[in-house]
Structure formats: structure tokens, C-alpha cells
Amino acid sequence: MGASEDIHKRRTAAVARGVSSMISSYVDHAAGGTLTDVDGREWIDLAAGIAVTNVGNASPKVVEAVRRQVERFTHTCFMIAPYESYVAVCEQLNALTPGAFEKRSALFNSGAEAVENAVKIARHATGRQAVVVFDHAYHGRTNLTMALTAKAMPYKHGFGPFAGEIYRVPMSYPFRDGLSGPDAAALAIGMIEKQVGADQVAAVLIEPIQGEGGFIVPAPGFLPSIAAWARSSGALFVADEIQTGFCRTGEWFASTHEAVEPDLVTTAKGIAGGLPLAAVTGRAELMDAVHVGGLGGTYGGNPIACAAALASIETMRELDLAAAARRIESVMRPRLESLAAAHPHIGEVRGRGAMLALEIVAPGAPERVPGRGAPPGATPDPARTAAIQKAAHEAGLLLLTCGTYGNVIRFLPPLVMDDATLGRALDALESAL
Image (cartoon, rainbow, N blue to C red; front, side):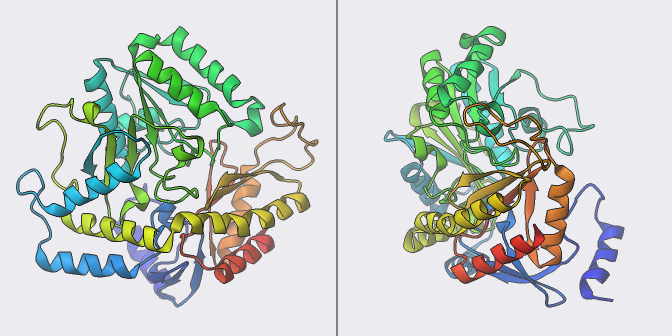
């Protein structure tokens, strides 16, 4: 019996069944772009803890910063006895997030908590209640964020009733709708104005590139059009950059690709090298609109997580991980396009930087006509997607799927992964396909 098998038996008896894992191996240590399990098997990591370990696992500066902080103190609660590192993280976020205006930040624990607080801030600042979200969106698993999330299974099934005043409109999905960005935005805006009312909307909340929904990159012009409408209507444009942030897409934040300046930005995942930390950053007058004591939480901005975040940001700058993400794309995209040409069940290669994906469809679909959406017969093929993932895992490649239809293979390598390891990963993917 292997060590992983032994731990798995203990897990079955101790851990709630609703908490799932992608593989049945148990990690012993990790570095760079690989994980090694307790049985000594190496895995090439194309998951990065779901876009968390952008600076790699056990990144040296993060390890040292955490060690120093643990030796000094582990917790005081910033709301009780504050400390400098919380302030320093907020300063960094105010400087790094899009927008040449005065900003403020508040720190939390998880992406879902950041999104909830962004909604609180938007409602308080505008005096309105309605929140607009999009098809295929994923914003978290708490009660409010489940309402914001589009996909029912496994995120919402059986967990209702959900929070109210949430309205969903179509997302720009070029592979399936064939619309230009402005046309897709006009469709969404028309629904908002007819079904909600522009003067009722507190916030329009969107992922600049959708994550769990399928790594959907909206058509050019969609995000700027939505942002412009929100501003003209007195609503806040809120960018959920939890998966796209911190150099993942080849820029520090994905909103920058189309020069969009959100009123509020939510961050988490890649911010702290694997430690739990999240934030809301936004226009000073909006963030400061909330009364004193209205934002916070016992662990929000924990000093150990703040130390890790500062070290992670320093590492991102020193190693220019935004450029590293673009390099990863320059290596991966040609191989993925070549695989798509050879495998008719790959409907599309999409994404930006080190956030790339393949959409898997039923084979035999006619060739797609640009500007007309997915062709007849481009039916999502979740069974084939799962089979590819299983074959990849058997080859030692840690690979994730996503998408509303369960038919997207996503790639999220740590941004420090070298070309040799990336090449081995792509070889394993080709074999799995």
C-alpha cells in the first residue's frame, strides 16, 4: 500500500464527502512548476493551486518573509492592534491596480469575501441595491456569491435560497455567439435597462476573463462598452480580478488589456504566494463612503499573509512575471494551435498570457465561420474532456477543467515555470489527447 493510498483511507473516514480533490495522490513538497507526492511521484503543475502560486511554490522571498513574521507575531487583529505590513500591502495595491486616481484598499481572507465586500461598498456608496452579473460567471461559494455565480452544479445545487437583487445578463462569448464586443454589450445593456432599470443598479460585476465559466475572453470592445455604460448610469464597474490578477494574463491586471479602469477591483489567489489574503481596492471616495467599522474581519490582512504578499509582489517585479506570462503564452499557444489543427474535437484555443484554454466539442462539427458563432454540431463534449484530463493525470500532468458545460481544459502554470518543464507538460498533453 502506498502512502497516498493510506492517507486517502484516513481522509475518507475524516473529511466531509462534499470536499473534493482532483487527484488521489497527496503532496509532500513542491517547487517551481512541479509537485512531488508522498510516494515520490512527480507531477507537472498546470494548475498553480487555481492561479494562486504565480510566484511558484515555496518561493524563497515568501518563505523568508513568512519565517521572519512568524517569529515576531502571528496575529493581533488589525482592527484591534494595527501593524505596518497591512498598510504597506494597501499601498502596493493602490499603486498597482488600474486607474490614475486616488485609491483606498481593505484586506480580507478569500476571494468570495472580497466580492461580498465590494457589493457592500457599492450598495453603500450608491444607495442602490441591484447587482448585475453575467452568464458563465464565477464569484464564490458563500450565500451572496453563490447568487452571483452562474453554474448550479456543484456550486449552488441544494444550497438555496440565495441573496436577492442579483440580475444576470449575457456575456460576450465569441466562440458561441459570434457577436462583436459592442454588439454583445448592447444586448446585455438592453436587458439591464429593460429588466432592472439603469437607476437601480449599484454595481456591474464582471471577470475581465471569466475563470471557472470557461476562460472566456470577451470580444474586443465589450468591457469598455459595459464600463462606459455603468459610469454614465451612476453604477460602479467592479472587476473581479481574483483569478486574472497579479501578472497571470501578461499584465498585472487583465483590465489593462483594454485600458479599462474599474471603480472597484477584487483580488485574492495570486496575491500572497499561497497564503490566504484578499482585497478590495477602489476609488478613494467610494471606499471611504462606508462608515467607520463597516468593513473588517478578525483575520482580514493577517500579518503573516501580508508579509507573504509583500514578498510575492517584490518577486513579481524582480522576475518581471508579467513578461514571464507572455513568454509562457509564446511557448504554449503555437503548440496548442498545432494540436487544434490535428484534433477536430478542439473547437477553440483561447486565453491570454499564462491563462489559456482548449474548448472541447463533439467531433465532426463543420468549420466555424468567423462572425457567426459556433458552427452547428459544435456540441460541448464533457465526457471527452474528462477522459483527456484522466489521461493527463495518468501521465503525471496536473490538469484542470472548467466551463459551464464542463468541456474546457484550462492551463494555469506557475509563472516561474521554465521552458523545459513547460515542454514536458505539452508533450504529456499531446499524448493525453
